[in-house]
Every structure is written in C-alpha cells, then in structure tokens.
Image (tube, rainbow, N blue to C red; front, side):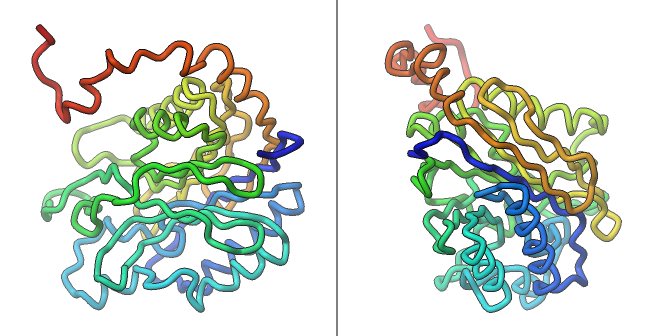
Length: 311
C-alpha cells in the first residue's frame, strides 16, 4: 500500500473525437494531458472509455472493414505506443479505455491499468453493456454496444499497483451498485472509470439535467457506501453533431466531489487523494467484517430480474 497514503490523482477529460480524427492525433492529445497532469503533481491519470476513437456504437455499420477500424488488435500498438513511452518517461500510471478485438475474433469494450513503468498490470472488459442490438430506424442515433461487444469475461478485480489498490469499470457499470461492492470487498481504494454518455436518451424523453444528476448520484453514493475514491473521465461535447455529457469528477469516500471539470473540452482535473479517508470508513461505518449480513442478501445473486416477495 502507498506508504504516505496520498496519491496525486488526475482525470483527463476529452472533448469530441470525430470520425475523421486519426489515432495519432488522439494520442497526441492524451500525451499533452498526461504531461499537464504530471506538472500538477499527478502520479496516475484516468482517460475515458473508447478514448482512441469516436463513440462508434452510435452508428449502424454493416461493412466489416469499416467496423474493424475502431478496434485495437494489440495493446500497445504502434499508434498508441508513444503514450506508453511518455508515461514511462514521466513515471505516471494511467487507465485507458478502448475497443478490443482479440486474436480469436472476440470483441470487448475494454480498459487497462498501466503502471509508472509503462507496463499493463490489469485489464477489465465491460460487463453492464447498455443499449440494443437491433437497428432502431426511428431513433436519432443508435446505441449498439450489445451488437458490437460481448459481455466482459474477466469479472470485477482489484489490482495492486504502485502502492495503491485499484478497481476498474466502464461507463454504464458505474450505475450498478454491485460493481463497487465487489471491488470494495477486495479492499479496493480507488475505482477508476471512463464513460461516453449521450445527452439524449433514445428510449424515453429524459430531461437533460437528469442525465448529469443520475451520473453524479451514482458516483457519490457508491464512493461513500464503499469507502472509495472514484475518478470518472468523460469523453464529451459534440462528436460529429452527437452531444455527450461532461461532468468528469473525482469523488472522495465521503461522497463529496473533490474536483469537477468545467468544460466539454480536453481538461485535466487533479486532487491529492488522501487514502486514509477511506480507511476511516472501512474501519467504522462500513466495516464489512463486523456489520455485513450476506445471508440476507441472497436475492442479489439468485435473481436477475425482479420477482415475487419472499414467503
């Protein structure tokens, strides 16, 4: 564990990445923010979900070659290697989300944890895939994560890295309390995540302000109830006319917002995260070993959907 219990923690929010933007151009933006974060005392940087491309699940794509260009077959690859090299040079770790195409042809919405030496020490594949797999002809755009990705097969795992225990998730995972509880039961201290959240809900008429409100509630409540720091990085703004929310944040284990992005552009926010705050909650209010009663929570794992009351 981190001996002084303080980590310089940064979130690197990204503005739009358009269809025409190259990997090389995107990586240059990531490197610029990595350098800024280092200059502000950060030892770890959180980048968004699908950070290397536009949010392509909004498009119905029938041409396989066109679809495949959004996926990374290896990581790092030549286009992304400069980010790893700069991280190693600066001695800064990072989290990065991207679309993964495995050698076996499987497709995942993936995130990796990279240490200060530029080595990948953890991988996560998104479990709570939102959206649909059919072509919704009347929708203003698609949300085809269920078509373009498989449900993640690596589970929620905590990783010890550079003296701190990290957990990872992606976008819609942040809205599910099970995500954080499973990580907290592994004594995770920080949960890092990226997201691409459309400003328009294609399924019902949800006011825009609720898109941000429910985003923040999910992060704040789960940070508090699991004694975690939570660092969430948006890709936001208007990508080729399709708008996504911003509100990248770093939340303390108290549930308070410690830092929040002000723009919908590339923006770095930083906090000197005191990990001892989480220790206090784990020892007292949320002392799991002392207070949890899992024998009464069986429905959480026995049922997928809601059903009849227990007899």
